[in-house]
Each structure stands twice: as C-alpha cells, then as structure tokens.
Image (cartoon, rainbow, N blue to C red; front, side):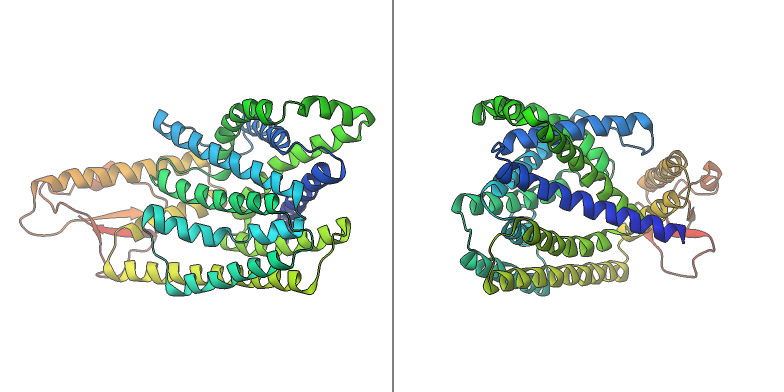
Length: 410
C-alpha cells in the first residue's frame, strides 16, 4: 500500500512540476511582461546547477562520474543542444498559446524517426512510420485553425521539437558505450553548468536589458517569487522524471507524458482563456492519437526485434538480461556499490574468457555460469582450459541452472 502511495505521489509531483513550469513560463513571458526567454532559460540552468550539486552533496541519489575528457566533450555538445531546445521552447511561449505549443511539441517523435534515419541510418518498421502520419496531419490542421497563430512562435516551436529529437538521437549515438551511459540526473548535473556558460554571453548579446527589466518588474516582490519558483521547478521536472522512471517504467513515463500534455492544454485554456475552435481541438486530438499509436508501434517493434535476436542467439541479449536484473536488484534495496562490484567482476570474467579464446580450440566444451547478481569468483576459471573457442555465445542447450541469469559457452 505504501509503495502505491509513494508511486502516486511521485506521479502527481511530476505532473505538478511539468505543468507548473510550463504555465509559469507563459505567465512570466506574456502576462507579466518579462519578455526575455533567454534570460529565463539562464535562470533555469542556474537553478538546475545549484540543485544538482546539492543533491550530489547530500548523497540521496548516487550520481555517476565523468570517466574521460572525451565523455565530457560529448556531454558538452549535448548540453548546447539541450540549451537551444529550452531557449526555443521559451521563445515560442512568448508568441503562441500553451495549447498550440504542446501540439507542435508532440511532433518530436516524427523528427526523432527522421533524424535517426538520416544520422544513424536506422530504419523503423512500417507501422511506426504509419503512426507518424496522424502526428503531422494533426499539427497541420491545428496550425491552420489556430486563432492566435504567430509565424515566429511557430518556427521556434518546430525548431525546439526538432532540437529535442536531435538531442535524443545524439545522446543515443554519442553515449552508446555502456561505460558512458548516464541516468538523467547525472547527465543534467554536467550539462547545466555548460549551458550556463553558453547562456551568459547569449543573454548579454540578445537581451542586454534583461537584468534592468527584472529589477523593474521585481519592485513589487511577486516577480522574484514567481521567478525563483519557476526556476527551481525546472529542476524538479528532471528530478521527478527520474523518480517516475524508477518507480514505474520508461513506457509508463511515455504514456503519462501523453496524458500530461492533454492536462496542460486543458488547464492553460481554463486559466489563460485563449480562443479555440473545433478544428484546433480536433487537430490536437489527432496529433495525440498519433503519438499514442507511435508509442504502441515502437513497443511492438522493439519486442519483435528482441525476439529475433533471441532466436538468432545474439549474445547482446544476455547482456541486456544481466543489466535488467542489476537494475531490479538496485531498486530492491541492494546498494549501488555492491551492484557496481558485481558488474565489474562479471566484466572481468568475460574479458578473461575472451583472452583464453585467443589460442583456438581443438575439442570439448567448457561452461562458465554467471550468477544472477552479476558476481563471479576467480575459482570459476580454474577448470577452464587455456585452449578454448575465440568467441563467447549464449548457449540454448539444456536447462538454465537455478539462480543463474545466463549460461555462456566458452
């Protein structure tokens, strides 16, 4: 019962922080008259930097370290793309309603599929491409019917959606090495300071009067309250995003995200009372339907791909199973240190097995069982001949020993 209550509280916090920062952005940029989206983004990144280091210092969440200068350069590039995304999103809110902004933002999957094909030559299934048709058609309908359409805001929102897709593709491409992958909070801790460094000269160039305008608007005190609340909510969006994924799953997060967009649109219409018509609502509905179809099509495609790998004996399937079990153990109360040690031992064992295979093999088979906790003892290698096959493959012959996650034939 307590677990369900905790999960519910995390989801509500995620909804509140996401919708809160969106509505506050619109309120500050439009209603309050603080027309400085770049400076607002700088405030967000400053708050994210401060909160990230506070969380790291508190040790409440185990954050991952940067292991090399090359990895830091990759993260810095991602930070610049991330920074561009947030700035353009805030610029669009300066000119167009939240409802139209969310409709355009829902096209991110279409840009992701296009960029994945262009950059990584990664092709999706026909069902995935077909599901993107209503996503695009819905935005076209909503754009043509939007009473408060603004070309500048439209271009900024479309560019922000494509930049989000670019960040997603680059993150998958640049941090594909398992040693370089990071959770969202760790990545934010390194990206936010880089974004701050990039945004300071950008703000001085594009919005030189931002500080004086902030001082003028802050004369009544309410402006500073809203600005600080908005800035720290920007960090809690990322924190609650991390917690929702931890307590549920990435798929649940995606489904909840689709529903969040609808809730944000309804609340924005009720609060800002911007005019809408049947066609704009219909267009947004078509887009959301397409996004849901896209999520289901991607899920089916990934499941089919995994089944094909299992049928072909792809050794990467065993690695995925091991990583999944390690994550489950971490969530079940096992310390991050123990899990890291187990993973290191397993990796060392597999590297040793590869070295043993360098001399070829004349006959017979040896087996190494890797326990479900990822640990391995040195004495497991004691009976392995120095002459063995050069490549490890996951065996499918015979039943899997009880308590073991994988059986590798060496």
